[in-house]
Image (tube, rainbow, N blue to C red):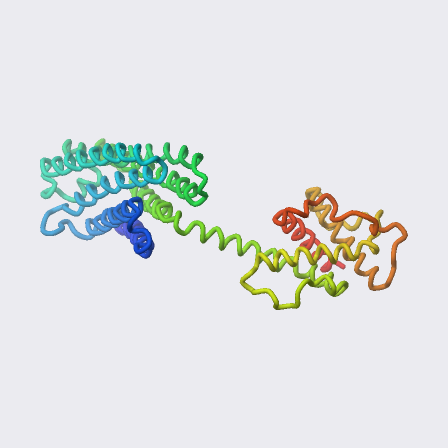
Length: 386
């Protein structure tokens, strides 16, 4: 079980260092920001906490003092929780409220760390086996030390969970709202860590062996810190990821529209607004918009060849939505109209008079891309079955 505990500490430490390095890369443009400096201190404390945890798993002493790594880990964990709470205040409250709440949290953190240090040495922490600080081993002073430490971790989890929900509803900043939601998830996972540690301590004090379930606290701790590390950095990279996801979605749509656009272009070459290659490859939004307009124009050119009374074909299953059925019907009409135009067959009752795309808001590009992608997908599937 020690190897799994060490692995959990290593995962938490690596995620902490990754977040710290990422934030330090922004030091030149952000150092004057107090919230940024507080965040860097928080990540440093987070790194120290889990580095000391890994050290404690590998050695019973640190700097020649028994169990000192455990004490440093716990003290830095308390400071880390206080610092994380201060970051939340800086993110989501006005300056005046943040100042006096910050002072309250700092005072509480200093008092609690002083209490932990005193209890550690009164309980002869340097002379005890390291296992005592994992379960308490029924020693009253060690149990008191551990329970105070767990409470110091649980209370910030509860307050952060409650505040993040309220602050996320208040902010208009999408990346900040995402960070607050992730911070809320991290608070839940770390609260489960506190519960699991309490169970470990109480069962050990009662002489109950829960076996491998003791590792639940380590797993919750590592998972919570990974989510926390992401939440503390998401305001700076969340926007870039969102833009990348949006670009990927647009690129998929652009590619999906190609078979429909190609056949319409071959039927009506005049729909092309610019020569091929005139637009920059990087200007995907422009290229997508242009493709949508060209498909609309090609579709309009086919109206004399679309029979008004034709219901098209239905390539959907019995459980398909009405929109999917309509997409297949219109894809079938386009395919039929292309064949009619090639043969010069004009139906007597056609759609040449009036109308545009049926029941579509062509002023909304996003909605139109979604709709045309459905039609293009249906068009491609009909081509495979024809």
